[in-house]
Structure formats: structure tokens, C-alpha cells
Length: 215
Image 1 (cartoon, rainbow, N blue to C red):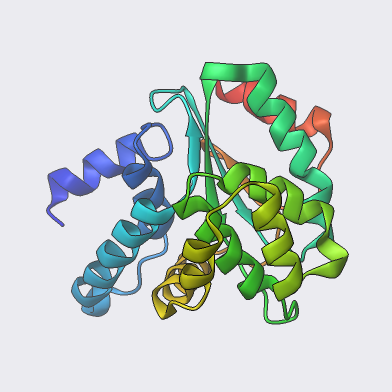
Image 2 (image 1 turned 60 degrees about the horizontal axis):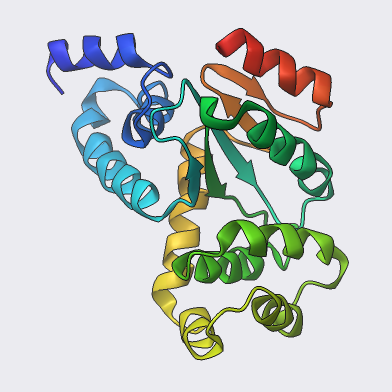
């Protein structure tokens, strides 16, 4: 990356509204030493492109707020804050662009399979409905539940099952989790509001304050 490009990226860090800048900003701040930079930049570019292309997103593409949600379907605190994030999206309307990053945890044995199921719902344009209902049945995650929720949100079950068994779907979720790790996310929920971070369970007042500061 040339020096002018580096300067431009620093200037637009968390302030730009395109997802590629948001994703690049996370990783740019965590690049390794100079001797490894070129190789790492190529890997980061590929990872950013994959995450950008596969992240569920909703809301105004030109919104002044980008709210990135790093979340794990088996994380109880992620379930706890999910209604607050929904409320923010509803109350702030076109001021917010929501982006979801599939984040898994080895201590949560169903987190990857649940993320894959939600990604498959995303491929049919039903991620946000699926995500909400999946959190509601968090204590019963597993293949039967994934199918039940898919039927409840009217997915094409043939396509859904094919997606679940496709190794490419698992690869997407693992790329998201790798991106989260590279971004320094060690626990969920982890939510960014432009340059501000909420990295544990939070209240509505804390979320609203972060949004209002970023407007």
C-alpha cells in the first residue's frame, strides 16, 4: 500500500460508509511488522473481500452510522442485546447501516453450525428473520431446530439443506471468525458504532449514547 493510500485509509478510518473501508479499518490497525506486511496485506485483502461479499447487511447504504455486530448464536449475552440492536435500527432508521459478522466460539459447540444455518438463510434473503427466531430457541440449537426455524421463515428447504451440506458455507463462516480474530475480537457481543466499541453486554442507554456521539 502506498503512503498516500495509507494516509487516505487513516483519514477515512471508521468514518467512511462503505463496508470495505469499515472492514479494512479493523485489519489495518493490526498489521504485523514491516517484513511480513506484503504477505499479510494480500491475505487481509482476500479476507476483507470475502467477508464484505457475504456479510448480512441492512439499512441505508449511505447512513452516517455503520453498526457492525460481531455475534455468536450460542452466546447468552448476544441474545440479551439483540433486541436493543433491533430497537436502535428501528428508532434511528436511515441513520444506521447494520452489518453482521458471523463469530464463533470453540467453547460453544453449536455456534458454528448455527452460524452456517443463518448464513444459508441469508442466501435466501431471510437472515434477519432467521437470526431473531434462532436466538429465541438458543437453548435448543441443533439440526432439527435449524430446519424448524427455516420452515418458520418460509425458506426453500431443498436449497437450505443443500447449503447446509456445502463446505463453502462452512468456509464463509470460518472466514468471518478469522476476520473477527484479526480485528481483535476476543468475546461477544462486540459491537462497533463507527469508531466506538461496545465489547460486553450493554444497556439501551449505553448503546444510544454511542450512537448519538457518532451522529
